[in-house]
Each structure stands twice: as C-alpha cells, then as structure tokens.
Image 1: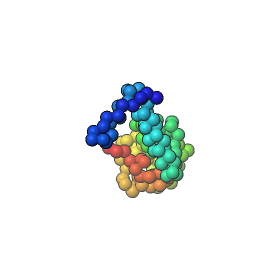
Image 2 (image 1 turned 45 degrees about the horizontal axis):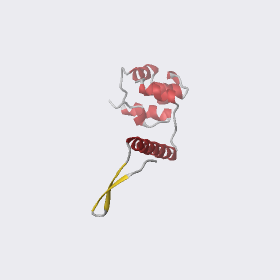
Image 3 (image 1 turned 180 degrees about the vertical axis):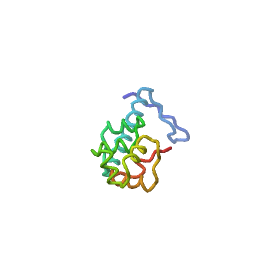
Image 4 (image 1 turned 120 degrees about the horizontal axis):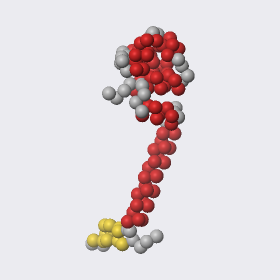
Length: 123
C-alpha cells in the first residue's frame, strides 16, 4: 500500500491524498460492496427469481404477457380460459394490438402469479 498524504488545518484532518490506482481500487471495492448489499437485500425479500433468458426477452421488448405465459408453460387457449376471455383477445394483447382493460390485465396477472406491474408496460 502506498503512503497516504494527510492534509490538516488547525490540527484537524481534512483530506487524505492517495495515488490514483489506489483510489480506483477503493472505488471498485465500494461498488462491489454495494452490489453485494443489493443482492443480499433482494434475496431477503424472498421473491420469485426469473432466469436470465426470460429477462433478456423482456428487455428485448417482447410482450410480458406472452413471455410469462410461455414461462409458466401455458398455451394462449389455457391462459384465456383461466382468465375468462377468448383466445383472439389474448393474442391481441400479446401482440400489442389491444391494451386490455385493467380488469382483464389484473386477471391475467393473477393467472400468471405475478404483480399487475409485471405485465403492464411503462408506456
């Protein structure tokens, strides 16, 4: 470890001057510690975790209803029956041709066992 230069004023320590490489290592360590803290908090919430492939599909702007329906192993016909809508309506929701009412979207979210926010686009 390199020698640290301390800058004082009126007998109080104000600054510590360190070499740039050491500063970068400290920043990396702090970032890693924050990532570990966030990861630990996420695990403590004991929420369902989804595989990376599913997340990648969502990030690629595939419709969340379709992605989650397929992840749950349901056909459009099966999900539509659970929700009480026809398959054509569900297909239109999944393709973005129709938005779906709040009531229907809530029923879809319940059938997929996710929060409504998980299937509603941010706009």
